[in-house]
Amino acid sequence: MTNQQLKNQILTDFYQTGRIDGYYFGKKSTSKLNPIREFIKNCLYKTFMLQSVGVQDNDFISDCYQTAFLELAAMDAEKFIEIYNKSAIKGSRLIGCTLRIIVLKCFSKDRRNNNPNHSLVSKLGFGSVFNAGNYQILPMEVNDEDSDEPSLILFDEETESDFEREYGFTPEELIGLLSPEAKFTFYKQLEKQKPGAPSKERKSEKQELSEAIRGIKENLQKLKGFTND
Image 1 (cartoon, rainbow, N blue to C red):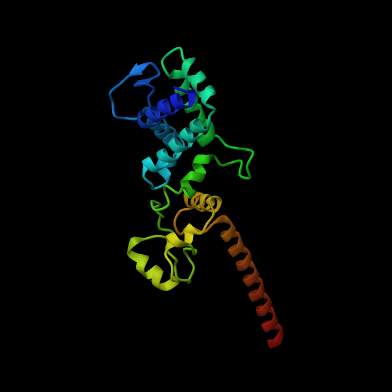
Image 2 (image 1 turned 90 degrees about the vertical axis):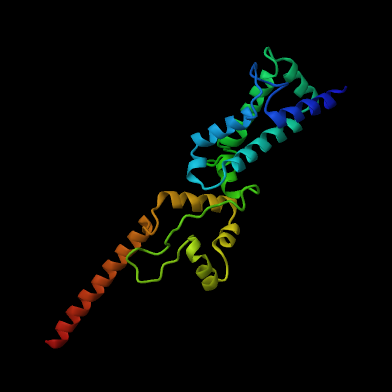
């Protein structure tokens, strides 16, 4: 058997079970739980991705899992087998390498790209092909609470049909047009701002407008008094 054939055999079993020959860091188990997926799930909870975004947890896990095994699949066969054979405990070195790939590729900030504050998993949360149909958009009013303008609600199941009749498209279609970076920004703003609450910038603009209107009123009153005299 060639190194490539052996690599494919090991990788196939590893992908299906999350274990090397039935072992995970020296412990053999018959549990159906995939320990690599459980590791990813714990990482996702630590980053609050599973709590703050309404998508199924296995969608995020699948994204990270696929990323790790794509890296392993792209690895040179000789290097892969060397890592596999050098384990003091059966398969532990290869498992450790996989976990390191997951942390570095999915949860570490990549300062080489244009968005150094974003990790891969934060992008996956808002741009994943696996998760495209699973986003839950929280209700949000985009106008000020004291504005006379009609409220635009994103997203409430009871008003979905009214929204589509009014604007000709659904909220999902609108958000689907955004880039992954724009989606990330959109959802981060939702986390920071309570539904219906005006932003600091909007408050500042309204304050400036109120002061301008007050000044106009004062000038009109002065002008009126001057005219009456």
